[in-house]
Image (cartoon, rainbow, N blue to C red; front, top):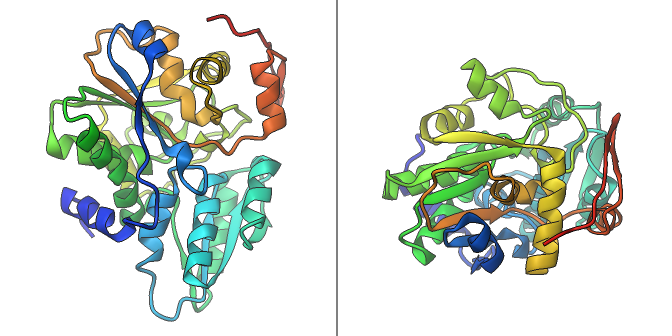
Length: 335
C-alpha cells in the first residue's frame, strides 16, 4: 500500500465516531515564551488516554476475516489502544512488552481484558515474541508504527490541526518509531509544503534519531526515561516510517531528561494538564530555547496522559527521579 494523503483522508472516515476529535487549545504561557502563537493538540483526551488509538482503530477495522486475536508489541500506549480496539470488535488481544514498560501502563492494558506477555529488556525482544504469536492462525499483528494503516490513522491528527489552524507554520511532533511523525508530516506537507515539521525526542536512547543520522535503521540501547513512550527500536527491516521521516521531517531536536521534567511541571502548573514525559518534548524544546528562527503559529501534539501518578507527583513536587542508573535531580517549578 503506497501511502498518500488519500489514505489519510480514508482513515479519517474509517475512525470517525470511533475516536475523539481532540481540541487544539491556545497556550498563553507558551505563546509568551515562544513569542509566537502556540497551540496544544490534546490527544490526552482520547478514551485510551493517547493518540495511538487512531492508528490502532484504523488498522483493526481492516484485519483479515477470521481474525480472532489482535497482537502487538508496545511501550504501553499502542498496546492499550489495540486492546481497546479488540474489545470493540469483540475479539481477544495479546500485548507483548518488555520489562522497561511502567507497571501503570501494564495495568491499564490488563484492565481492558488483554493478555500480557512481558519479554526481555527491549522493544525488539517484545517484537520478536509478537511476531512469533502472529504466525498462529487467526492472529493479526498491528505494528505500533511501521504499518500504512497505523501511519494513516496517526496522520489524521495533522488533518485536524490544519482544519482548526489553517495558517499553522510549524508542527512539533514527538518522535519514536516514526508512525506519528510520518503520518502528521505527510498530511501537513501534502496540503502545504511550506509547513515545517520538527521531530522531538529524548537525548538518551532515541532510535529514529540515530537511524536518521546513520542513513539506515540501526539498533540502540534502550534506557529508562521520563519519556518512556518514545523508547524502543524502529526495526532493522523498517519498511515505511523511517523513509517517510527521512523524506518529510525538516529537523529532529533532542531534549534532556531535565528539560522533560521542567516541561511536565510547566504543563501542569500553567495549563492544569497531566501528561506523560513523551507528550511534552515539544514544550520542553520551547522552554529550553531550542527552537530558534521558527515562524508561527506553532502547534505541538500532547500525545498521552498514561503516566504513573506516583511518579508524576514526584515530578510536580520537585523530587529527585531515579531512571535506572541515572539520577535526575529534582527542582521546584518556577514560572
